[in-house]
Image (cartoon, rainbow, N blue to C red; front, side, top):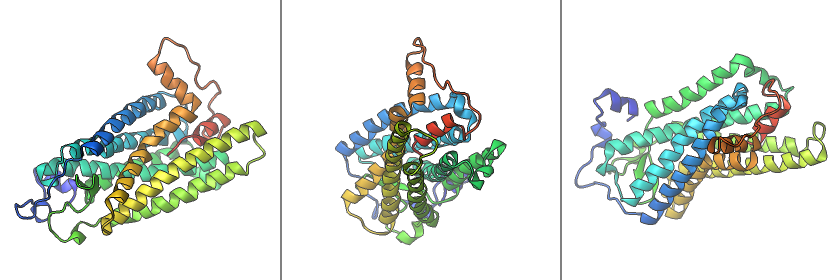
Length: 332
């Protein structure tokens, strides 16, 4: 029931779980409005994020732990946006059911599921790094300084790739414009339950609120390192990015877990799908609105003839003031 089985068995789905028959064949439903919405908003988000991703990858602050993790997060987010928006829009617009394109939907579901899992662990690690940037005396900071950060980079890659290859994927339902582990072939739904997804989403919901809530608390109570004007600006940025990150990831984590086990109303399922879309897509919006350095770098990529000075302060590590400012206003 995994992508690895599919690859190792001649790109054939396991007939015991994914064989389509004429009597219980799921029926597709054309959703032209929502299909168009997800497709075109997905294209817009993907293009904007891709430009930001290139700016991050070529930025001087790629030397810092925060930007290394942000690079990994960018790969997972771009993959997620492609699947949860663009592919979802196309399948929904044409009313494609699982049995119409079983292999394509199976593979896209595995990629989307692995991308979501990778986003979760990467975002939580990035939150820890941000907290340590603000509180450099925390002992946990020693875990990722220097070359040790590559252990966590590797962990992010392994976690997401293993989820895509070795666990049950999600499959698309045009009736709900969303993705479910059960393809609706009339078999026992318990066969398709993914316990890893359940524990991941529960951990994501708790970890997101806890870590980003603590980060916002630190900035609201920080009085020593910045003057009043700077602190006010940082407070606003951190509170906004914490809200943006928490609300979308919390909703998508809870709704996607809930609807796999309980028959949820269509409206709630759509909310969960949109939350997944913006959980990945809102990152680039925050880059372009709150991160002056990345915004200038993006502008320079689009208009290379205009010289824009980016990152004038020297980089000495992820805990220096410049890296702290930049990492503090990113969304994971």
